[in-house]
Image (cartoon, rainbow, N blue to C red; front, side):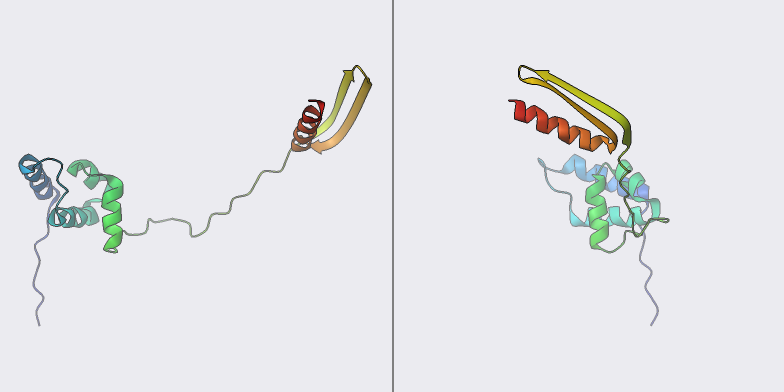
Length: 130
């Protein structure tokens, strides 16, 4: 059985169809399904960004419609997994904290501890003082 050749929509034709629809629509009518189908077809050939820009449609709406039809090609070089590594906390070589109050003096000497420990200690001391 021979395949029937379907006519493909060009970017210029889709642009003209969208323009005509925008001129004749009433109020804030939604874009008809046949125009979205044309936009998806054009985006398959011309690319998502260019099509959305030329047809003045929202990029994410066009992408979602392409995904619904299973026609968003995976981007080349897209990683399947991205490992996020937290940086090691930088240790302070040496830190001395001296506190003086009505009841006396306090001296805390810290060596080779991460800065996050100093922040926690400072917060605890500050909160206990008030």
